[in-house]
Image (cartoon, rainbow, N blue to C red; front, side, top):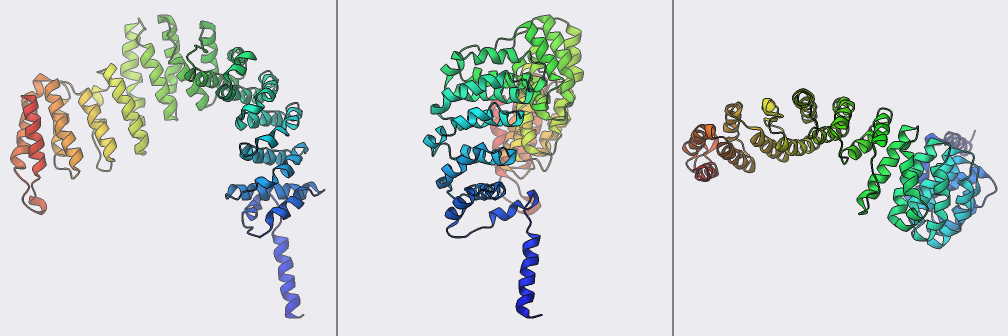
Amino acid sequence: MSSHSKSRGKRNKKSKKEKKGPGNDSRYFSSTKKGEIAELKAELNDLSEEVVKDAVKKVIASMTVGKDVSALFADVLKRMTTQDVELKKLVYLYILTYARSSPKEVLLSVNSFTKDAQHRSPLIRALVIRTIGCIRLPDIVDYFCTPLANGLKDPDPYVRKTAAVCVAKLFDISPDSVEEHGFLKTLRSLISDHNAMVVANAVAALAEIAESTSKDVFKITPDMLNKLLSAMNECTEWGQISILDCLAKYNPTAKQAETVIERVVPRLIHANSAVAMSAVKVIIKYLDVVENNSMRTYVLREKIPNPLITILSGDKPELQYVALRNISLIVQKEKHLLDKHIRHFFCKYNDPLYVKLEKLEVMALIANNDNYEKLLMELRAYGSEVDETFVRQAIATIGRVAVKLDGAARKCMRVLLDFVKSNPGGSGEGKDRSVGYVAQCAVSVMEDIL
C-alpha cells in the first residue's frame, strides 16, 4: 500500500472518531474559517434538521466566544417552529441574546412564541414564558401578557413557578400592565398553591415588586402565614430564604410569634448558612413580642448561639465576615447573647485583616464583668502583632472595654502602661525592635480613658 493511501486511511479514521454528540460539543468552538457566516447561513436553511441543529450549535458557540452573528437572526428565527426541544432551546437562547440589538426582528417571533405557549410540553410552555420575560422590551409587553396569564393558571407547577418569577420582570418594564391584568392578585392567590416551589417563587416575586414600589403589595394574613410555614418544609433552601425574609417583615401577635419561632428554630442548624441567618433574623424580631419569658430565655441561650458560632467557625473568610457583621447587629440588641462564647471570637493567625477587625468589634460589644479578664489577656498578645492597623485597633478596643466597664478600668490601664514601657520608641532591630506607634496609641487611649 502506498504512503498516500495510508495517510488517506488515517484521515478517514480520524473523521470517524469525531462523531457528533453531546459529549463532543467542544468542536464547535474550534472553527476559525473565513466566510463562516455564509456557510452557516446555508446550513441553517438546509432541509435536514440534523444539519440545522449542528449549524445552530455553531452559531451559539460563535456567539459565546464573542463573535457577531446577528446577521443570521432571520435564518435562526425560521427554526422556531421546530418540534425538537433541544433545537428550540438553542434558538430561544440566540433570540434572547440579540433581542436588544434587533427589536424589530423579535416582533416577527411573536406568533411563534404565542403558539409555543400552548405547546403540550410544560418544558416548552415554561421556556416561552422565561424567554419573553428575559427579553425585556417594551414593544412586546402586550404580547407577553396573554401567555403569562395562562402560565400563572397552568395545570403544571413548573410552568406556574416560572410564570410567578416573570411577573416581577414584567413589573420592572411595565407596572401598569401588571396591575391592569390583575397579576398581583393572581400572585397572592399562588401563595395558597399546593406546590411549595410555586409558593416560594410567588413570595420572591411579591417581595421584589414590594421593594420597587411604595405600595403594600404583599399583605400577610393569619391564614397566609400558616400556608407559608407549611410550604417552608417542602421547598428548596432558596425558597426557604424567600419565605423567611418575608416573615421577617411581618408584625405578629404574641401567639403567632411563638408558633412561628417553634417552626423556624429547626432552620438554625441548616447546612446553608443563608437559611440559618434568615432564621436568626426572624427569631430575633419575633422574640420582642413573645410574652413567655421562659421560652425567650431558652431560645436566646440554647438555640441561637451555637448556629452563629458554627457559621463563624467555617473556613471561608468571606462567610465569616458576613456572619460577624450580622452578629454585631444582633449583640447590640441582645447584649448577653454571646458573652459566654467570647473565646470563639479570638483572632487566629491566618484570619484576614477585615475579619480580625470585625472580631475586635464584636468582642468589645460582648465584654462584661465576667469575661473581660480573658479578653484583656488576648488583647495584650495582639500588641506584638506585625500589622499596624490591627495593633492600633486592638489597643483602641482595650480603651473601649475600660470605658464600658468601670471595674475593668484599672486592669486596662495596667495593660496600656505595659505597652508604653515595652515600646518606648522606634529603635532596635530584630527581636529587640520596639515599635513607637504602639506606645503612641496606648498613651492616646489612656488619655481618652482618663
